[in-house]
Amino acid sequence: MGGSAVINRIVVGAHYGLKDWVAQRATAVIMAVYSVILAAVLLVFRPSTFEAWQAVFANGVIKFFTFLFFVSLFYHAWIGVRDIWMDYIKPVGLRLTLHVLTIAALVGYAAWAAAILWRL
Amino acid sequence: MAEMMIKKERPRNLDLASLRSYKLPLPGKVSIFHRVSGAGLFLMLPVILWLFQASVTSPETFAVFQGLVASWPVKLILAGLIWAYAHHFCAGIRFLLMDVHVGVDKPQARKSAAAVFAVSIPLSIILWGVLL
Image 1 (spheres, chains in turn brown, cyan):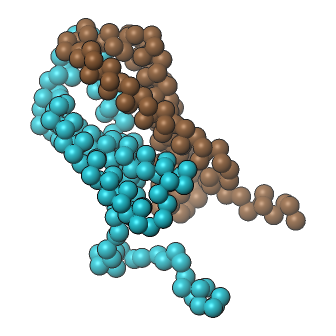
Image 2: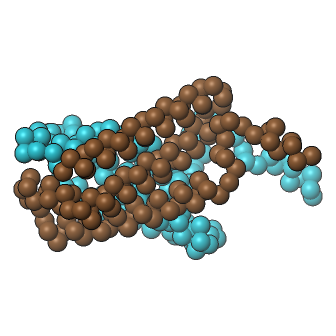
Image 3: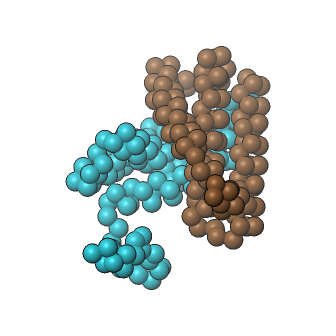
């Protein structure tokens, strides 16, 4: 019966799809490309004072891609940390609590990152 | 034959005591360090964000940031984070290549595992020298 697959689903599982798998790889590529480009920018401009350092991240393009990096990082971290909880934490209640705490922390970090960048 | 395969019971679950005598192959080391470095980076996210915030917000917070990163305890944490980022980056590229079926068979996987360490360790040392 088709219904059995639904019955066997675990609330704290991995959503049984390619979505997270693809998202983890896509965010990894975004972060890797950003890391190399930012390193190149810093090597070219060599910001040695506070004003120069702040100006790098106040630049609209860099600000946008830095925020994209942070969002990618938090999504990537969610999938990775969730995998760790799924591997080592067996009791469903505890695992669900850890999942919720992880999401709460990462959503908070995303808001924090936005606040840091858009105050520049 | 089929019965023999079943009796092998794979994957094997090792208990902690036998882990000490079990020699993890190099690709296994890349993998567990990938997890450890990822977990470490995740746990240190508030510290990383806080330091980034201090560095870009104002001349006053920048001075606080400079004072902190000059101290040995913070340098030690940053040294660990730099290694974690370098290893996670290099091992991640290896896993991405394997996802597109590059270097999946055993001899190549051993070589690429060695390459991860051969790049990530010198890269960490260079970044320590430049940044710390």
